[in-house]
Length: 583
Ligand SMILES: [Zn+2]
Image 1 (cartoon, protein in one colour):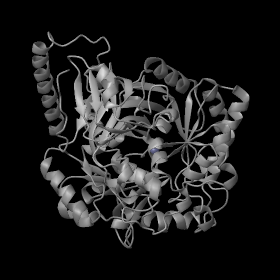
Image 2 (spheres, protein in one colour):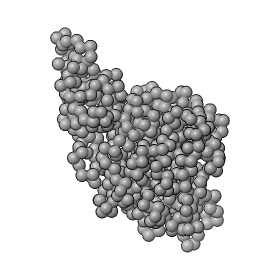
Image 3 (cartoon, protein in one colour):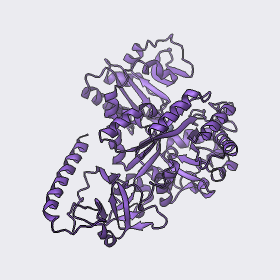
Image 4 (cartoon, protein in one colour):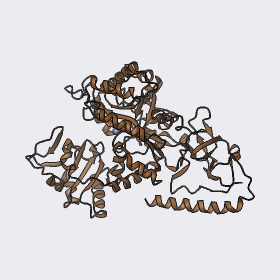
């Protein structure tokens, strides 16, 4: 937050300075009816516009791009009040979009203990302890982001590690994937969990050889503890969202597509907009649970679409989940899991009810996001979308499938044929120990050949859109770009890449986060590339992606982010904004 307020002081001072200079200079300056507010010059602009892929400068007025071309051409748009942003030959791209995010949840996580990349028990203990001493009045200590390989050999944490650092206050920490959680003794005691507590439906209290709870709680067992935690207040949520937006802008994000957890809080986003604090555009999906689509749900979605439909906040999308995840054998597969032939996952929906819901949503023109991870889940979604298309003939519906971790070979070309958007989160395929040992073991060698097949879908005419699924993984898109291109970890493992034929070019990876994302959110008329008439949402990058080794791209840093022509983030490194009076 310090950085944020520092930034606004900088801006208002410089604006005042420019205004003073201009008031002296304007008498002598020629009036130019074409004058713009801002000219970005000396840039290496990769526009993502096929008709003019590269440019040197662009002109911005009223939050929109007026012209794109050379430094010389943009001089025609200079007037006495025009600001100049000298990019000093840095690479400029359209602002990035995260097509699958849980923004409220991720933002709230920023205000609690963040265990992302903690790596060891000692580091987790340090972060918990530091947080506890910095927040002596908070009755609960909560957080998320721990990973299973941290706790070898069992893969599950133990309450004793938390008791060692904070014995007197309850602690509740979720795993990075949200499927398990970890409580200390105090929290277990408050929840009344003893030897005799039965496992809840769809959950498991992990126990030691004496039957005592170890502190690890699987799936729904976590609710026994989490239901006791105080709910965040409106103010806490607003504070969290401000932090979340800063985090998003810092990594170059200008828009997010919410895949759950934000629909209920649209008034908070609206509040931030009214206060002039919204710096991330948001497209929000209603989260539809099985067994069916109710009239109330339709009313809510219609109401939100009627209320929010501009470039900052918009509704009209519906997210639903057809299946679970491969790691827990809950993703729905056409054939049994390789490591356990008794399991093949289950669809969360009765396929007939799902098809009926898709038909109705499609008929009403809502955009549908279906979470489908297993090959059976993906096929069920494709079948339903095709059914709706034949029945309704809704023009350009662009239904989406989220995740698509595995797919049956004959379904690959259906994305292009039916016009279904393939919404991938490249970092989910990050080929670390978890992916290669657990995911690939469960899916099996045959299916693992078709893991995250973005390139194959694209080759067959399907359109790609990329995102993160934050807070499951970081919202930083640069490791995602790297993974989409290399199918390797940051250390270049495995040597040949994980299913290397799925590697994308840099241009295609960028497109997934820009123009492809705009198409996936029905906004390509006004967003997704840098061309005249589109919104002035852009980023200035520290290193030139076109000159970097792909395996290093995860280290990319954003120097500045502009949303609607306004600087919403600039890095401490970025000293080169030179604001000059018009000439
Ligand atoms: Zn998600």
